[in-house]
Every structure is written in C-alpha cells, then in structure tokens.
Amino acid sequence: MSNLPTYRIRFTILLLVLLLCACINICLGSVNIAFIDSLKILFGTVTENSSNYYIIWEYRLPKALTAIMVGGGLSLSGLLMQTLFRNPLAGPYVLGISSGASLGAALLIMGASLITLSAFNYITLALASSLGSFLVLSLVLVVAAKVKDTMALLIIGLMFGSITAAIVSVLSYFTKAEKLQQYIFWSFGSLGDLSWGQLLVVALCTSLGILLSILSIKPLNAFLLGENYAKSLGIGLQKSRYTIIIATGLLAGSITAFAGPIAFVGLAVPHVTRQLFHTTDHKIQIPAVLCCGAILMLLCDTIAQIPGSVSVLPINAITSIFGAPVVIWLLVRKRKMIF
Image (cartoon, rainbow, N blue to C red):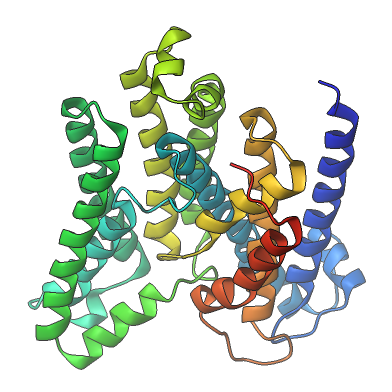
C-alpha cells in the first residue's frame, strides 16, 4: 500500500490527540485538579487530598473511558450501516435498535405503573433497555433471513423504529409528569453514571462488536461495490449480513442501554474519517472511526461538563451543536463527499 507511511503518521497524530483529549477530560470538571496531580493519582501516587483521588478514580476516569467506548462504538456501528446499505445517511440506529432500547426504558419508567420511582435504578434501567434492544435485534435477524434485498431490510428496520417510537409516544401521553421527566432525562444521554462493573459489560460488548467488524473487513469492502460483486468474490451474503447486524446490535444496543440514545456521532464520524484519510478501505476506516469517534466524544463531554461549574449539559445536545458545524466545514472545504 503506497500510502502506508502517510496513514501511519495520521494514526500516530490521532492517538496523540486522543491521549491529550483524555487527559484534558480527566483534569477538567466542577473541581479543578492540576494536571500533575491528576497524573500522580492515575499512576497510583498517594496525594494529600483523598477527595481528589476519589473524584479521579470513581468518576472522571470511568466517564472518560465511557466516552471513548461510546464514541468509538457508535462511530463504528454507523460505518457498518452506511457500508451495508450503501447509504451515506444511514446510522447505527436505522435498524430500530436504539428505539428498542428506548422502548424498554419507557416501559420500565412510564409503563410499570405498579412500581414506584424509588424502585428504579440504573441497573434495572440498563437491563430493560438491553432487553428492548435485544428484542428488536432478534426481530431484525428473523426478517433478514426472509428478505434478500438489503434496501428492503433498511426500510423494515425504519418501520420497527417507527412502531417503537409510536408506543413510547402513547406511553408519554398517559404517564405522570414525574415519570415522563425521568424518561426525558434518560433520553438526554449521560456518560457519568456508569460504575466499573457496568463499564466492564459495555467494554465486553464493544470488544465483541469490534472483533466481528474486523472479521468482516473483506465483505464490507465488497459490499461497497454492490451485492453482485460481493457474490462474485464468493462471499456469503446472508452470513455476512448477519455478522454485520449482530456487530451493530452489540455496539449500538449496549451503548444505548447504559449511556442513553446519543445521536449524531455514528452518522457523522465515518464521513469525517473518509475526508481525513481519503479511502473507503475498511482496514483503514475501522481503526480511524474508532479513534475519531472517541476524540469527538471526549471533546463533547469536556464541553458538556462546563469546567469550573457544577452544571452538566445534555451530551446529546453538545454532540450535535458542536459536531455538525465541523462536518459541514469539512464537506464544504473538500467540495466532494467520498463514499
């Protein structure tokens, strides 16, 4: 590959930027902790201020790792969907997986009228969202076995999303105000509510999704030139489609269940990486979207937590407000979208 040295330089820069963004994210917050003190705490050096140690290890470090996994995972699932459907507007949620998670959360928060609000916690909420995602994913896999046309599968996935959104709307209409408010807060998305145990579950699901994506590099590259071309290379279309859908379900489903439905990242980051690397080869695109997605989410989370203030803005709003102009600027500057 003639551009290999160039790619290595760009990946080196991306990794350094990722490391810098992670350090900034950990250092900044409602409590100002000096950069040197943060590094000492991270490397296990005992400091005089025990509260700083708790803030770093129990809140900021898990939140930074969550941002890295959420940004990378959603970006990769968006890349998979855009390639599978050969549609630049496809995102990680086109199959209704996010809507399934939202339905699970809505049924728990707004539909369980016999359960008081005090009985809810993040574990049961994540479990309900995961079950909702798994249910929709199972239905999509059943339909995928019956439907041979990929575009038909896309439309069916969008219909699943519409059905679940309609059920959530009905529940919202009849529910009490406090339950509706709790659901709205969940829908804003949050990166700072995960324990180390929950983080481990997300890391496992994300790792499996990445592994399946790496194993699907050849089919993904072939899908870019059409299903007939992929078939001529001896690629099993049905098996490859299953693998890509399951990978997307693991990535988007687990992330939505634990962090809420975070928009824009999965749709935009694949376009950014194509502009930066000038290639559609998934050997380059997969690690590129993982790095760029993680960087974008870390930056958005740093902005959302408003350094020096106790206020935290909804991460969903920040990803769109600050991310969309970047994508628009890149596309206008390049004057041509690579796909």
